[in-house]
Length: 184
Image 1: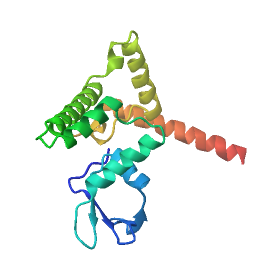
Image 2: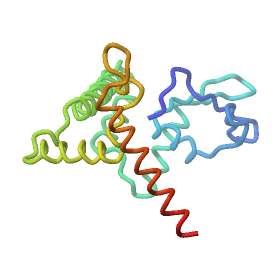
Image 3: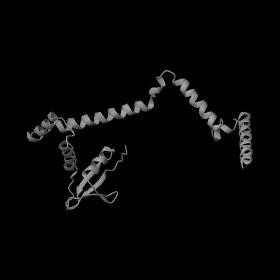
Image 4: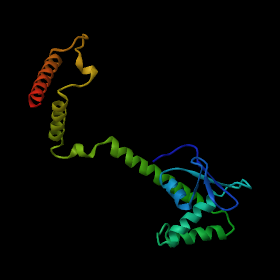
């Protein structure tokens, strides 16, 4: 996800068109929903009055998805939300929802972190053999070359093993060049 600390600023013009200030083009509600799905925070303001319209448009995105048959929220939750707004009392529902979603996001982040820090394939039978084969293949493909750090012995001189490998590669290259010249 492409998260940034600064929300994407969307300006609503008097014509009700929505303008993305980063890309200097007009966007739709579906575009805004895409930004949010990608992990981007948005802020939608009315150009003329300066009012923050973010909540209104986010609710509109949810309503449009609901109208297309994409169930975003269960009916019981929607009823509870309506009740919490209509009672006139201070409701704990918005705070509860915010805390619930925060816990959900944190839980998802921990699952992803655990999946990347602990390789689940490492417990698979035969994984060590497969990893050894992969290392042997890479060594064969690179001629044993491990990069600049692996070309010298600890005393700073080329190691005998690397020198032998280099000589073998040079011989093979010379043989290939000779074969190519015979083909011409």
